[in-house]
Length: 306
Image 1 (cartoon, rainbow, N blue to C red):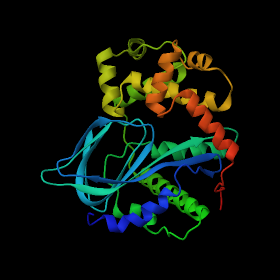
Image 2: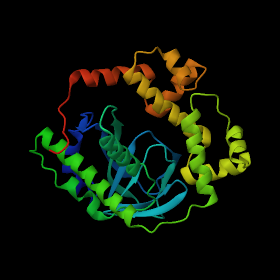
Image 3: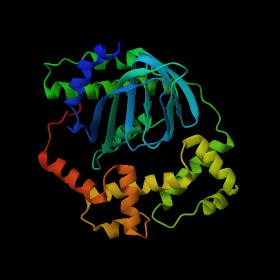
């Protein structure tokens, strides 16, 4: 047992009670997918990878280096860091070091049907958490997680976890609004326009060269700028958008898989199923069944304002 394990083992057990228990705040559903210890032996490293969930990592003992979207930063004991979905990242130890801590993984789901103000606030909540933050979070960030009590009811734990996330959101939103405005460079504009293009035409056949032609840049320039700013290739981002749209259709309609594949831009149902599984960690059929089962179970929720 490493020195840091004693301090977080209790809170980790409490968080594990929340796993796969959806928490609802207005039209936003938060699902804690995993809460696990993370002990890495000396000289550990992990190659570049990405995942479809938010991942919060707390380092209780030791330290490591993490590279997120091309920027490397250092995490010391007591600090933490957040990796949004789809962001390419990697980890490594410095010479002679190891680390020990815990990892939380969760997903957000925004439901349609709310008023315009609520929908905008919920979209901003997700957007804020999806921003790449290539730096270690201060020790106070994890403090509310250590205050969780083992005798607490499930509802109390759900409320506390939702409160921790909303507290992070308020801190980050305040920090962003206080930051000085910066002029967008040409690369930033190209990436933003590429994202608009992908969101508008994901259901069609999309070629990277066509986007480059529309933006009056070369294929190589577009590919380099997009990868450097997002950590993804243009095709990877296009597939992420298609999978997200497919999730909505799987939840909100009874369309057969072949029709959903065509509706989000895939001509081949089998390719759609394989790629969906890579991004969502479940086949389309499994995802639809899980969402329907979750709704049928009507889990206890944390309502807005409570």
